[in-house]
Image (cartoon, rainbow, N blue to C red; front, top):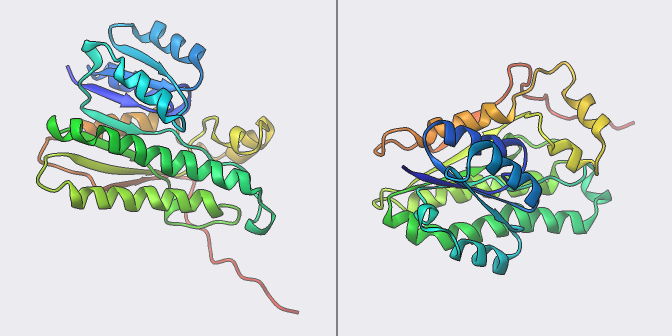
Amino acid sequence: MKTALVTGATSGIGADCARAFVAAGWKVIATGRRADRLAALVEELGADKVHACTFDVNDEAARDAALDALPADFSEIDCLVNNAGLALGTELAQESNLDNWKTMISTNVTALVSLTHKLLPALIARKGMIVNLSSVAATYPYTGGNVYGGTKAFVRQFSLGLRSDLAGTGVRVTSIEPGMVETEFTVVRTGGNQQASDDLYKGVNPMTGADIANTIVWVAGQPPHLNINTLELMPVNQSFAGFKVTRED
């Protein structure tokens, strides 16, 4: 039985990834900051199928301690799903909070590359897989996306760079790039404004965390000689914006 490590598994896409992997016959190491939610996931899916590791991905010491203490049944990781990440704020760059920018870079970029680097030797040894959660924001800029879009562009390019470097090792790498997915994403981004989230997704029929999780498990289940480099997904009701034009008086 293969094992997947999923970061940010306390909600949304991460929690649904744990469910989807278990349904597909995998074991899951579920990581996140909220111990109560991880405990609920273990109770839901079974302690023989899910092992919880409570840490903030930005805390490398706590991360390493948790991973070094993995029980034998969960110690061999076949797939790393770098899902943990966030957006903070919707302001224009010139009106943004610098601390928010630094938090997005720390979580979406630094923590992701640090965990990936730590697990690369084991993934190479097992001819495993890395799935990085990027976004359509990596490709299509929008007002207020500034640093968030920049971090996701990094994730996309980092994934392609890993593919180049890992050629010949048997390790597969995929960048998953979703559009509108209704999770806690917008609530977090707006500082807890549920109404803002409801308004954004109203009438859109957005994708769900389960939609993305099922896609990730499908990617992971492809034959070992087949690599999906990037996969961009949008709800049918979302498409590409026109060019923004400012008219002078």
